[in-house]
Length: 375
Ligand SMILES: Cc1cc2nc3c(=O)[nH]c(=O)nc-3n(C[C@H](O)[C@H](O)[C@H](O)COP(=O)(O)OP(=O)(O)OC[C@H]3O[C@@H](n4cnc5c(N)ncnc54)[C@H](O)[C@@H]3O)c2cc1C
Image (tube, rainbow, N blue to C red; front, top):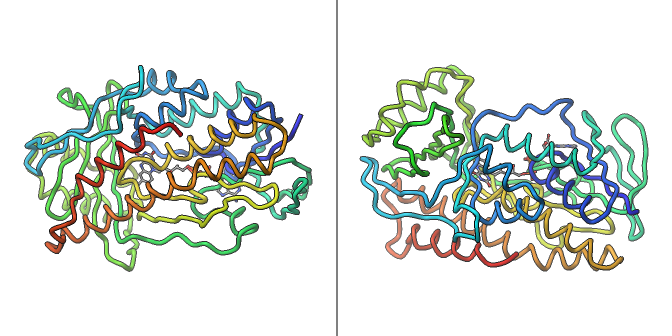
């Protein structure tokens, strides 16, 4: 049996654990955190992410423990709906599923444990001796081991990427996202997006009784640090431009600074190939996209599925990694590039400088449609 090490136990790494077990690898997973501390807002799972989870046997658990919904209703700041967006329907799967990040993590972790992944928590790699035959790894606790394959799934600031491919830094895009969880509004029958003049805001179901809000804002090129004491007043101030009843009815509930999850948006696309010798990269470590298309985690899960499928075919790992690259690069590049373009246009729009030819809705619609293609 071949042996693989996955570095990073986030959405991508856990999915890869399941996929590589399916491909008959012995799988070890090294995760830096001693215990997982996943923040308590939600994540959008479009149909292509659910399709990938389905092939790992995990879509039903996500749907049962999350909240399936249809296309997202796009509305004015006042709440007037003008169109709907979403990835194409795929078989029996819903167009979207909203799910708490903590619950998604539990589903993936339970799936990886049931598949027989061996977890090594509170650990990373300090050195990798990489060749075309295998990798010898020294861990941060001084222990060593040898693997047929190492999968770098350690996120946007990847340590594995730095060790093997050198310096590739993510770029701050000028936008940030603010999120907050609420009790679900009865009238929230699907996902909603409200287009303001300075920001955009969304409401996404997470379970039958919970939902979360996101607000995308422009914070300037210098990526300011926002002290905790300012999180609540600033989020409330950003929402002042919305008169949609669904938004105004929850603003007063934003009171807990620890509940405001603020994240500057960064983007990164590492040039191909995403492998060298027996080290292969996946997820945000090589294609961190801003969430304008709600695709980052979905792409990481797709990476895991494709990697597992290709490693199942035949015996030559390097040929499998070539095929993995061929199936992943253009699709991930499309999402990273289009999401960054949408983010740029949004910022121009909010400054009243959007060029006439820039049609955000059409670009998003075309790209989401293209994601229906088989992976
Ligand atoms: C504001 C925001 C909203 C988003 N919304 C969506 C959405 O609605 N839908 C969607 O599909 N995507 C969304 N995304 C993107 C999504 O969260 C990411 O694409 C996804 O989490 C990437 O998964 P990953 O496993 O590659 O990386 P991560 O989730 O970052 O996981 C990396 C893991 O590696 C571990 N690690 C880090 N360094 C080391 C190390 N040196 N050694 C060992 N372990 C290490 C970390 O602790 C972590 O567990 C959003 C992103 C942002 C910023």
